[in-house]
Length: 298
Image (cartoon, rainbow, N blue to C red; front, side, top):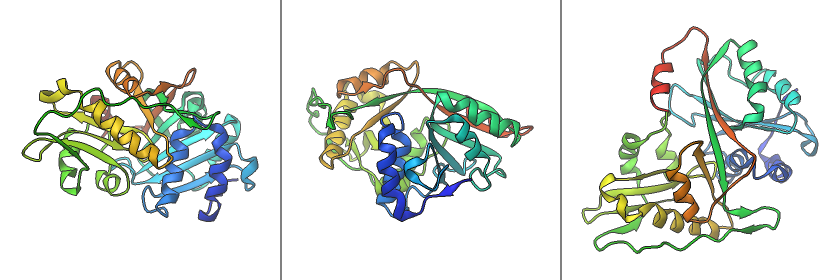
């Protein structure tokens, strides 16, 4: 059976899955931030494998229109029991089987075989991308304390200022987006924190945005200004703002990328050891309309 978690039970669920952190951080913060906005953004349906939340082992968070088409639904998944996760995935209404594309975002690699066996063997999908990702955190969960964020090593050069982005910058963010998907930046800017460096003409030349699942992401610096290390200044400033709300930050970095690791290490983040996540993209068998686009953007 699949049990849909109603709004009044979300705090109970969050308390239960806290024991799975930091490995379940993306799922945890998606649910927490959705609850904070009364499910306005991100818009979620949350399912568990047991009506008694204290006994559940598997949670599937279905985010509606988290990315723009062709990925209309994005799934965040965590489980301590792969067999029970497989059973939950098969239940009616949990997976939108009529969709041409499925996106499982930031799931533990240990769960990938369970997901693909269900979706590929029983739902007629095939994987078209499997992107390995490392998780970084700035908190000591056992002690309940934050790791110390380093202070920005440099001040802004003359003529530059720091302030949040606005709706008028959505088109610019979409142009500079390097992900294989197009996020709904307008919604993200409305409900989450972000900072940018502006030049003397009030043009943003660097930015960092808090993602719905806690990541300090969508980072970009104009190549002409990368010598100023704006990322460290912005990420530290934004991280401190978030920590003042008694919230941690996380880092999500594709395996094999060294520059982002160096950057977030400067602000005090550490890698979660012996743990790896995956961005798993699937498509209906026989359909290739988005496969080439996806692979070319990874």
